[in-house]
Image (cartoon, rainbow, N blue to C red; front, side, top):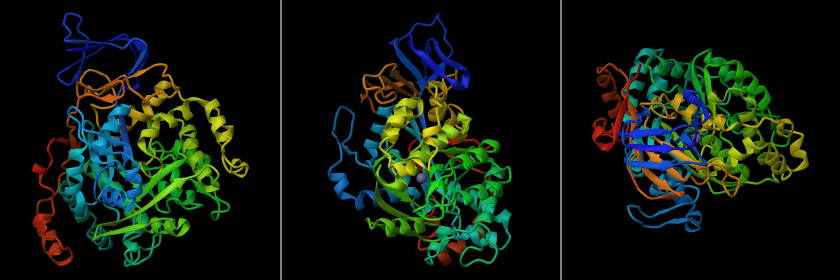
Length: 544
Ligand SMILES: [Zn+2]
């Protein structure tokens, strides 16, 4: 048994708010404190914070799109921090799109122990799982892209909702995914014809009945009917565009009380008619969000500096390329989705970027329930995940925020609310938005808390770090009961697990899919599903 003693424990899921108490670990799990039981190891956490390991609800760390991005920015890779071979450690590269081993070291080295890869096409799921397996230490989940899958859209067009649900269930298992992601519903399918889908109630290119609203409503209903642990994970239409708050609010209404997770909300909270009048609409969005308790969201905050935008939202990426003249890569994934890559730099003197920076923080400060809004940068779209400690400080320290606001152009300050917001996050609230809340939203019941039975994923940080940034260098990180990080350095490398779901579906659906596949796919039906044997450490989470 490992006993962590003397630390201040923050475990909001169990109502523990800074109490000094022991945390005991045995068999990879948190166990009740039994003073009669001898400890094999005692960790003295005096002067330190003891927290559940971080859970990233929305990130991009593995798969074809990431590899494409790595290849598109070789200059970035050359300049990247090198992770050298060490005891038990593999070499790797940092940069905006770190290689697999480096990704695990960086997450664990910051105190995060679970990550959700937010966008996987079924066709590249096999590759994605190989990369996920390669990412050491952290546990993973992955979401399969579904809102532009032509087989599903064709069934919705024909009014065959029930068969569509069986197809979706079959595809989730074929991809060995954990949940369903919708990106720019209908827009990516339309992009195959050079079009987009910006109006929620207008038919998608090539369809008579299918609209973005109809796709969102149907998928949210299917996810509920299939009893998936995580709700529909939704990247709304019109990402990044001035005035898009109207679409976001309309989408929330379309969901009509159904649960959904609204991804990277910052990119969907803009007012104005064009780029010259773009402004924050975080107050309007937060007000509606606060009322509708069926939703969770993640911030998708941006920080000034380098980023690489990677998304299935092909039409948006083309627009971003036209706006910036930067490099642009576009991929088409037959019948299923698309993908675009544009390297990007957020600049504090740029009016649009300044508004974006403020909006992410504003949403985190204006949404009143920390259990429903989570810390992300939509890595690497808004900033690298390793910069979370900067956002944590911006949320906890209004004075630091005011100093940072001085970097913005005067004009930007008229278009944002941030200078008027004085809320400061408590440490307990930070633990909620970085661990307890995302774990709950993902339905990972053994994550995000330190109660008996929880996975022993524990991070121990100095209470008063030298540089003033909490969560930067953990003193210890324990993953599944093993000490993996000491003094911010990876000391022991373990393999994480992959959480997947196996929703119920009518086996006969294969009779429907097989001939269709032979007709429209370049890959044969038998080679399409990812075999369960491909996953080295799968854990099937029940649907209930
Ligand atoms: Zn994303």
